[in-house]
Image (tube, rainbow, N blue to C red; front, side, top):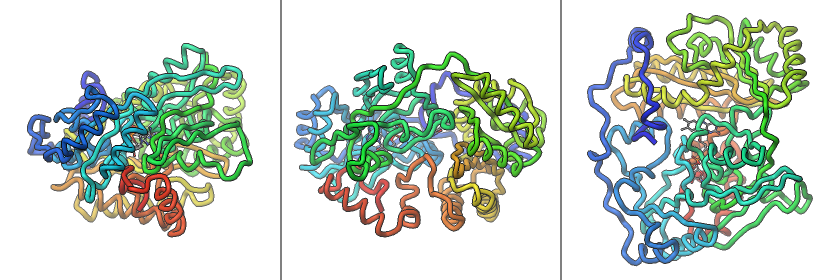
Length: 523
Ligand SMILES: Cc1cc2nc3c(=O)[nH]c(=O)nc-3n(C[C@H](O)[C@H](O)[C@H](O)COP(=O)(O)OP(=O)(O)OC[C@H]3O[C@@H](n4cnc5c(N)ncnc54)[C@H](O)[C@@H]3O)c2cc1C
């Protein structure tokens, strides 16, 4: 992973000159005076763990799998949100863990949790490290140190049950490797978040992730049928049958638990035959409202494409749905919808086309769809180039019922525009509907503005105001990024004080010393 950025450094992108010029003219973006800090320049806090604690960790996983060197600590510092990257670029590594521990299996995870409980060391389960909500930056005060529990050695496809169409995967498997292993059996998981290249199976489960093909394959949590979880109190094996009435579904406690209740050490998921055909296409709608009506019809009455997303007017004009083409497209008007079909294509595509035409859609053919598919993992690379150019660029997401969606859209867009304009940096606010359900949909906002003197504080003020606006407009504080530390202050507004108390009670019984990701998720 690129230092203080995203992806393979060999795939770094440069902004087209036209885009740089436009950013300067339209938003006042100027290249920052100071170059980003280099890893060698960064001062790390002195490691806090005593030799006794390091011995206990070594006893749990072996000396080769306990790392306290600078590089390991730096590479496990926070996640990959824009503030995370900006802090690293500014040379701030204050959240670096004191050690990185790599267990080799479930029993070793249990042993680490026991040692950390005994010595009161905070434990951060670490998958792909792509959290964008502060999920890897726990509270460290009151602890003897912080350990990043990197799960990369738990990387096996444990079992495939072709008859039931399920597969059991270890949590440290990154998504591309998981697809490769399943592909050897002719199967797919079909989970393609934008962080696909780096994010892990355990991370998907722990954050209730949602992929770009969620209309067809479902959210990650809806794919999970079984979980194995290591906690400081012992093991839970959950998911005995595909459906059950044996009390509340405890799997749901751990899906979205963000490392605060236990460490997921195996995930059994529903899988499908790998599709032999994939087709993506574009449609134009005159307005966002018309496009929303068409999305709703498909989500409620079908046929449902595998991929379904709708950019608003601003996002369509900028061409963000086709990021590899940025700067080369003319100004497009109306709203671009992308529909994609994987697996059985022909009948579904033809039927959906009838519905979309009836509702005012203009077919644009496969080119916009193919552009989207080619560039689907490209945007994070573009973010690095924008940060280099002096732009602040970040995303946020929410969801609500169809009837409340227009109000939520206006509230978030208006708040982001107002709060950033008040700070002297009028933004460009772009949005698309990223995931649809029969009852509602999610909104995914991208914000671009000139970086202020303190861009972390600049974003935080805008984000806090947008979070308040989301709550006031009845949206969820997060549709798929999770709570982490960034959304924690808004959790009670969503689930109530009693809901927070229930979570605290569960944590107290599974993690009595409170060492698991303290301060993440649970206020
Ligand atoms: C550029 C970019 C694009 C993104 N696009 C999407 C997207 O399209 N859809 C989406 O849903 N998300 C997206 N995300 C957010 C992020 O990728 C997801 O939240 C993902 O699920 C995190 O997986 P990870 O393996 O990187 O987890 P990490 O970042 O390592 O961890 C995330 C949280 O889960 C905990 N955790 C990790 N593994 C375990 C485990 N085995 N047991 C218990 N707790 C664990 C961690 O402690 C942390 O709190 C994006 C992020 C980036 C940077």
